[in-house]
Amino acid sequence: MFNLFNRKPKEPATLFYQTDVHSHILPGVDHGAQNLSDSLDMLRLQLEMGISRVICTSHVTADTFENTPESLTNAGELLKEAVAEEGLPIELFVSAEYRIDEYWSKEYAAGHVLPMPGKYLLLENSFVQELIEIDELMFDVQVKGYHPILAHPERYRYYTYNRERYEKLHKGNVKFQVNLLSLAGYFGKGAKVNAMWLIENGLCDMLGSDMHSVEHALIIKDYIASKEWRKLVEKFDLKKRIRNDRVK
Image 1 (cartoon, rainbow, N blue to C red):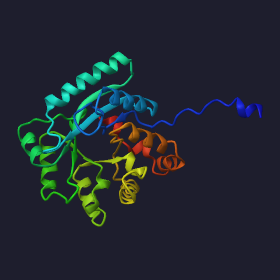
Image 2 (cartoon, rainbow, N blue to C red; image 1 turned 120 degrees about the vertical axis):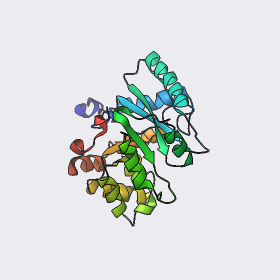
Image 3 (cartoon, rainbow, N blue to C red; image 1 turned 60 degrees about the vertical axis):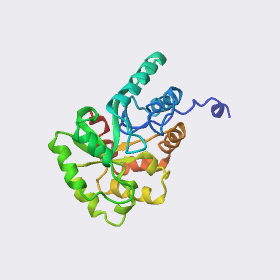
Image 4 (tube, rainbow, N blue to C red; image 1 turned 180 degrees about the vertical axis):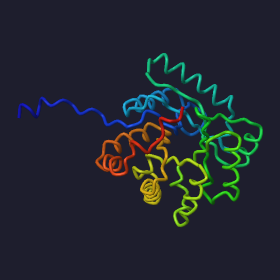
């Protein structure tokens, strides 16, 4: 009984990498963090999970979130100042999650893009149907010196029964970023099944939180403390295969 009451509290579970390549933490630019308080709360939870580098990838989408490099950079500077004032030991980078649509086409043609470190670009496909010219676009992006990352491919339902498309895109040097929220079951059974298939077949290059809120952060925090997550990391040797910390 004495030992029971004198046990040290468990350390919170941490991720095996330090860089989150997909997050919606910039304040007031999309449907992620709405203000600096939200942003700081989310960053504190990132720190608890072992993340010390956060790439802020706010939405750039036609009609809804027509962000520009200037709007995102300005929000990033506000957040960096708040992080410094709070003394949080976390490094921030400002990039975007680019929905491939008419707004993207215009901004990309004008060179108005904010790549991640290492000239990576996080690109989001349509959720309705695969874009007809996506192979040509991914090739063009690479010709221009960028490295395309397809955001959460497991969430595009049209690939569920056409997984050859996954393989073709990946063979075309498109990196795949799977969401931790998908693995946790947040986006439903289909997304989780697809995410597991991508991992099992060696097609998952990066993991991302895709967190839009404290609620998302807490779901991820619980998931990475689970036996399911630990078994997944060990069984598929994810510590060697996941490339998040190579984005620099």
